[in-house]
Image 1 (tube, one colour):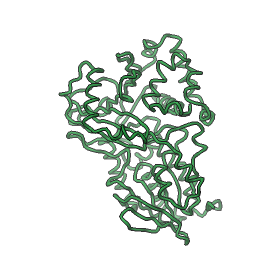
Image 2 (cartoon, helix red, strand yellow):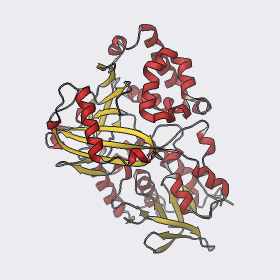
Image 3 (cartoon, one colour):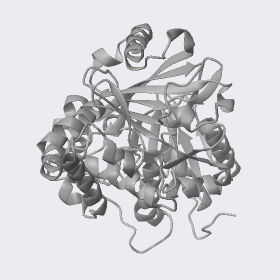
Length: 455
């Protein structure tokens, strides 16, 4: 039974079949609304979709669940998978000065040889102080470099923070606000404060392929319709209270409401009726993309889930050893390693590099980093690319975002670029969907007196 019987049963079009779109579809369907999810790709999931490397099917990009990921765990509970999450205590490593160092607990932090005692005190104080900050908007007004130099000191910034920012953001780190690093500190600190004082990560057996399959089946049971390989080209007001949606194949369909969950630039192109201010706000959003290689190996590289890299010569954002969390039995006895490199979406040279060239460069890198690595251990290799992964959180970014409810009647924007008080991950995506659903979408069908139409 729908959770809200006092509805008009409007027909909603959700543009984008990633976790945000599917989360919104679940909420609308349970509230008695008709929902069609339109996805340009031939499968659901977006950044959480799965693929096959070697003889193993797993996530294209790396994802884990934290103990503190309440929105994600709630959704998994709703579809009957939360109780199956396998929790594992993980370790964190640093590659600095050509050597590996463990940074998985307080004792290892104190022994960390890259920093002296005073520098460790400044670094620890920065993390502790950052975890206590509640007013994230003030941090949006200052550059990440200025804030980190102020709290950690110049030497600690140069040894730790600058290399990490460079690895994650490339040269774009110089334009990012302090809110970026605060969001990472807050999430990881919160994870350690939830129940156990350990770094516990989890996953659903079968990975996101199973999550998406189960979720899509439940959505279909609620009456949700999926249109795959259906790119939305246009969405416009028909003048009679509906929204005309035109698809790339030339077909058209009318909906009562349309919610875009796609990247900002695609929305600007698809909605010709937006006013100039909305269009400019959408078009100014810069995105960070990722080129992520998956290596299936005969044996693990290391004991660390994530290895942070501070050596400039390494052409990687980090090394993600997924099998420190995922049971190798799920991967046919192999070890799965992700090697991500984050670059600006506009970096055509990076995105145009051939898979074989990437493989050659990564093999050379791993051979230099890991003495026991042997390229003959590679049993599977693939490169996943995504140009528009995370909106770049520049100074005062949240103040330049377009409104959720657009000037085009019936057209709404709920996309990951609106994550302004967290970093991009599945839980933050679902939390944003929850927040904007209650504030903006519920009034559209609940007959509340505050329901308004943008002019």
